[in-house]
Picture 1 (spheres, one colour):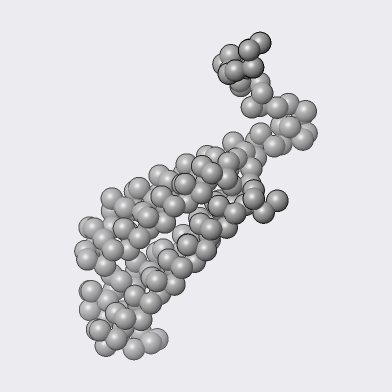
Picture 2: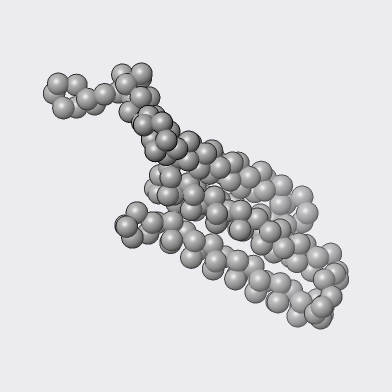
Length: 157
C-alpha cells in the first residue's frame, strides 16, 4: 500500500515545506518593513509578500485534497508530477508577487492550469472507479478495445 502513495506523500511534504518557507518570508518582511502583528498592512513591499503568502495558503487545502484524490484514483506518477509543477508554479507566483503585483500573473495562470489538470485526473479516476464498482464496466479496458490498443497474439501492444 505504501508504494502506491509514496510519491504523493513526498509531494505533500514538499508542499508543507513550501508553505513554511512562505510564512517565514512574511516574518522577515515584517521585520524589514517594521510591521508588527496583528497589523496586516504596511508598505506596498510588505503587502505584496503578505498577500502572496495568504493567497498560496488559501489554495493549499484545495491542492492537497485534489492531489491525493488524483493520486489514489487516477495515477500516482502523473499526479505527483503535476503536484511538483504546481508547487513550482506557486513558488514562482510568490517570487513574482513579492517583486510586483503584475509579476504574479503568468505563474498564477500556470498553477491554475495544473490544478485543473489534477481536477480532471481526479474526476476521470473517480468516474472509472464508480463504473467498475457499480456498473461492472472497466472504462480503461473499453477504451483500449475501442482504440485497438489490446494485446495481439505476439503479446505486444
